[in-house]
Amino acid sequence: MQPVWTLREEPNIEQVHEISVGLGVRPLVAALLWQRGIRSPSDARAFLEPSLNDLIDCFRMEGMDVAVRRILGALEEEEQIGLFGDFDVDGVTGAALLYRFFRRAGSRPVCRLPRRLDEGYGLSRAAIDEFAERGVKLLITVDCGITAVEEVRYAGERGIECIVTDHHEPKGTLPNALAVVDPKQAESTYPFKHLAGVGIAWKLADALTRKGVGTREDLLADLDLVAIGTIADVAPLVGENRVFARHGLLRLANTNKVGLRHLLDLSGFSSRKVDYVSVAFGLGPRINAVGRLGEATEAFRLVTTESDHVGLELARKLDSANKRRQALDGRILEECLERLQEENDLSGIVLESEGWHPGVIGIVASRLKEMYGCPAALIALKDGVGRGSARSVPGFALHNALEECSSLLVRHGGHALAAGFTIAEKKIGDFRERFRSLFREVREQVAAPGSLTVDKELDLSECTGELLGDLRLLEPFGPGNRKPIFVARAVAAPGGFRPVGKNHLKFAARKDGVTLEAIAFQVGHDKAELWGSYDRLDVAFALEENRWGGESRLQLNVKGIRQAE
Image 1 (cartoon, one colour):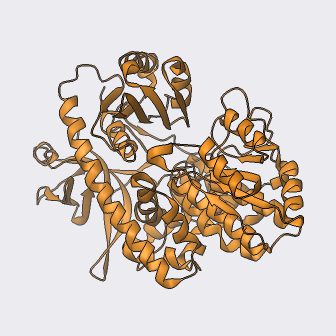
Image 2: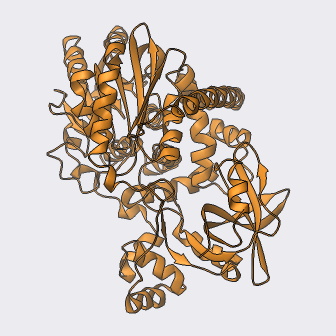
Image 3: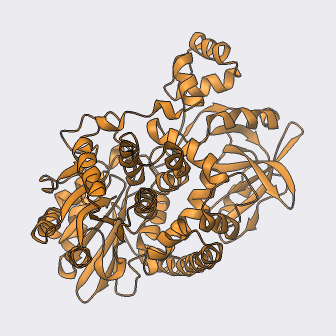
């Protein structure tokens, strides 16, 4: 399949004019809003100026009333509360948010995160036994628990009541918890279904605040955690998530958490504007790394410590773990690429190996998915059991596909685009065939790798600092609100293409006397010869600012290149 560049629908001129005049923004910004489905000045204002007042009443969420009443009773009776999160960024930040909240309320909660390598994802009997031994009477899950039917039942046998807060897809029977707070459960009428786990944790804390526990200002100070978890979990930045991301990133720029300040510094983002990139490529991978390679407890401590010395020490540990993680997934990626050269069928990638680290295979699966434009599942084998991590493309929902394969799996769970599973080694062959067969059924509806939706054609002369300033009105960018992509036609690259880093190419884009720097990330150095053979290029790009050595310049972040017609 050849990649397709699709130009977005031409906007309605009258509605664009109405938005432009009503908000005092340039027509281009109004047109970009229109293309994103925002058709009136009032909706445009709500999008450009997301307010905490736009958040939906937390008590509209199914199970919230019951959960709040039980927690209020536990606080009044000074019962021991337990918190169980996930080992990823979403789970860590959500558990940390509730931990900080309950500590301010005078409680001393017991917090436990799963050990990824020997326990795997989700609530376990071992964890429940530990909570019981420490006197926990009320257990609150964060970013997990919606499929923990047997574990919640076992907790009841140990005298522990459970409140499940989660954002994953339920699988049939819900756990028999005291309350289940998950907007994706079938009976939920909550209008926004895309909150991350940390967002639901914040909603629970907000509901408690409205009943007199803690202060609103203290809770708002933890919006930085909500932004980090939401962005790192690749939740769509629309609706309530846009509010959380916008206000949380502002809080993060002046965070009161010493560990986060040190981690921003070590990741090289402390001297620049704190934005989506700061989290997605700076904080997120480092917080995730310790959970991938060992225990996420150190990441939890980083975002909860009040000691500057401890915060710096933990930030260094997380940064070091991330470097080890990068080396591991680089090696696994190379091995996968070698094996895929011999594959004739790429209607879904399923690869397994004894030598792979289960904590990093998800990252590699994501890269393979991007490169080949099909779902990828990698399986780390040990003692006849495989632990798999899968990533998918829009149009092929993993949680549904894994449910179709459930007879071959020990357990599974996740979202449409990311999921995990456990499988017996002897069943991997059958799983591979069924997984590929399911993808073949929808393959024709899936866009080819490199396919783009382009917002507008621009001349290089229109790419100015003023335009970049206008585009920043649409921030924060991310899933559901990606950076606008433009295309410049018949561009020359007179200096050729220069390899930088491991897989990037830089060049000078020139047309009609205007020259701008351009960089194409993760395209491979071998593209230089192909692109260099074109007389003129059509360049699809996002306009960005490149800060380096104390200087700032406009830069084209290249999303695709074609030979100009």
